[in-house]
Amino acid sequence: MPLRFLGIDFGWEGKASGLACLEWTGSWLRLSDLHLETDLAAILKWVDRHASEDTVIGVDAPLVIPNETGMREADKLAHSKFGKYHAGCYPASRERNYWKRTTGISRELANRGFAHGDRMRPRASGRFQIEVHPHAAIVQLNQLDRIVKYKRGNLAERRAELGRLRGLMLSGFPNLTPVLALSDLPAIPSSGIAIKALEDQLDAITCAYVAAHWWYWGRERNEVLGDSLSGYIVVPKRQSANLSLADLRENYALGGLVESDLDASPFAQFEKWFAEARASGLREPNAMTLATVSADSSPSARVVLLKGLDQGGFVFYTNYDSQKGRELSENPAAALTFFWPELERQVRVKGHVEKVSREESDTYFHSRPEASQLGAWASHQSETIPDREFLAARVAKLQAEHAGKPVPLPPFWGGYRVIPDSIEFWQGRPSRLHDRLLYTRRTDGWTITRLSP
Ligand SMILES: Cc1cc2nc3c(=O)[nH]c(=O)nc-3n(C[C@H](O)[C@H](O)[C@H](O)COP(=O)(O)O)c2cc1C
Image (cartoon, rainbow, N blue to C red; front, top):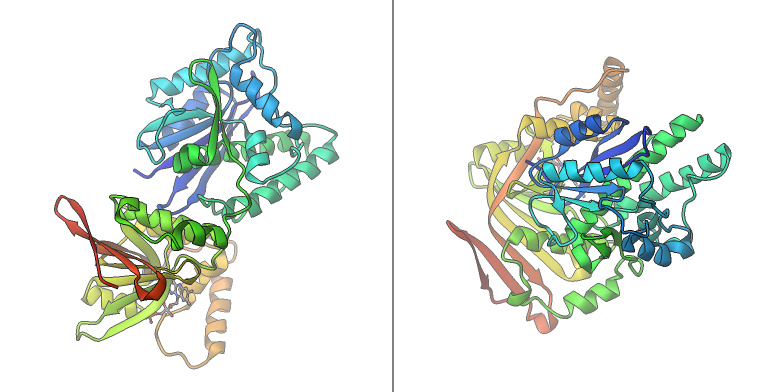
């Protein structure tokens, strides 16, 4: 089952709660559901539907009974830390009815196996719940100097601020690590009720994102205010802008690659390098050269995009009838090369290739813009065509045929997964004395050896 991150922006008594589900593709996150429920039983049903065995839930609601003063240590800390951004917590009193409900959801989640995540290790497997404060998280993740005030003021002010939040999320999340690839969000509505619903949903996305950020980085890039006895809030730390290339060079490239720094799993090691490539602002760090070999031993190579790292393999999508598709059906073996010049790094992968399930291909196909979906239908990839007009005419015909209808997954299009038997990490070093560390698959795991440059 895939890794999931759920966000619950818990509503006050009788008010709706925003719900968001993020899926981890292996390298980044995608939003797979955005929802609204009022009733606790319905919220829990939604959780049951979306949670897998490995799920972290970020809840915007106090999870633990407050102390006798009515305000928990975590709220006090959040208040003193984020007050200057107007993003402190509401003083939460034990008297309020909603305490029963909010602490109720924590118990219900615990009954479903979601342990408190304040002490979880980064990348841990299992079910966890953490408490999140979305206002503070947005301020931190976007380096703001004041809160986005979408919950206060008249309708016009709230709409404007909610529009600002929507814009920050669309431009901010795809540039953070882990990446949340958000290409769109619902438009800002005009009625007060609909605005409230969207506020709750956007906050739910932030809650889910903080759960993912906590899972990914742990305390390296998050802070835990309070503790699980008296209540705690997980807040991302401010990053000094994106890690600059200069920092990366200083920290990693010039330091070289030594055995003791390597993760025992080549996938975890790849994710680490990939996250650094993304954080460095490199263009298309997921572009990789794919080499295939035909049945008569003729090699060919081309660039494709990595679209997932999961189930032990590197996933890309293409036309199954293309040259590479034909070669892979004759000889299901491939090599991949990533080159990140600014980091002086190369990764080489070699392995066998399997098609991904039709369900996975369908999900990915429909996550693409409609124009790309029609493009996939229009192009009989790698076949000779008379001219560009031929292609344009095919697209126009398909557009007319599919107007107002969903575009189905073409039977000749889908994903491949390269399942490696070896992965080499190459780090450039002075005087051509580069570091080359090779993971080789054995029946009981991976061995790591050093190769001469
Ligand atoms: C940056 C970049 C990304 C590309 N991504 C893909 C991709 O994900 N899938 C794909 O089929 N082709 C992709 N292409 C095009 C391929 O390089 C190639 O032209 C096409 O797949 C036909 O290859 P073939 O005739 O060997 O099958 C990409 C090209 C570039 C330059």
